[in-house]
Image (tube, rainbow, N blue to C red):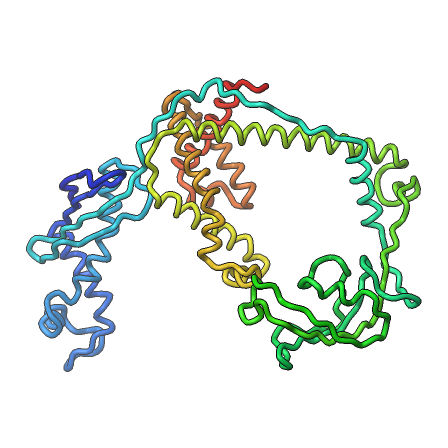
Length: 426
């Protein structure tokens, strides 16, 4: 491979002109022949045994060229990128401009590179730290959750269903007299007033008694996730099998003693207050950090390529797919369940992706501005932490994550601390 030239092709665009020698191309053609000959039938020869020259005479001299270019081209482009020293942010757009047995291969690779970044004024950023007060009322509300967790459902047979009850029902939905998919269930447990069903459904069960069979009329919302049911009138046939109400115990020392590590309500509430105050402090710290990040991004100047934002959105979607996989759910199934599409999901991530990319660029520039460095010990610790988090060995982690990227993560973390150390927090 020979890198012939590096040319400016526009904002954040660099075009590399690359040549692959005739000798290297010939080696790639021979390799392509050895792979392809197993699939070529030439009369008079056993399958896979036909000579290369005979195949070229039969199908044309260029029969192996495409596979040969695919064999040698990607590495040539990768090597040229490294030799040029450019920092690309997406796969290059590759154009093969010449293929010749005598002269080899010529390639143009258009590369999107990291933008030029300038930033100043990031020392001494002023932000206000606000810690939300924890009131007695807040603690009481949190303590009442213990009562909710220890509640139980009691069957009712002497009154009609009312809001807050849990009913067991069979139902079947009809539109224009025809049953529709997904509108039927038996023995369904529904808390009236929970909003699980479309507006009007739960309210119209109230007032009915155990064993009663009745119809209710509802209208599906105009924005309902199933297209054929948007804005549609429907009738549900209901059978009310059982009514249960929630019995909630009082918050007293006995409940606390039976359900927690504490002996009294006062001890339990004191612990709750402590944890809530710690959480309030953590929220305040997080809010300060976000304000500092917003201020840093505002002080950065750069023409960021759209592809960097797009790639970050795609990374976020891949992360989501990875989290869903252990549950046996594909990304497409998730979109169906939530009424989303790939495009709408990408749109949801756009703002977050933009902020993350801009912040990373700003912090990387601060690393350069301040001459921040990372020690070998710090980089090794980052590798160890990653290995522990992913339950992998350090050696395995190093096969999938480059040391250069890990080192930059360490440096960016130190840049964040630099911003905090130099901020004015009121």
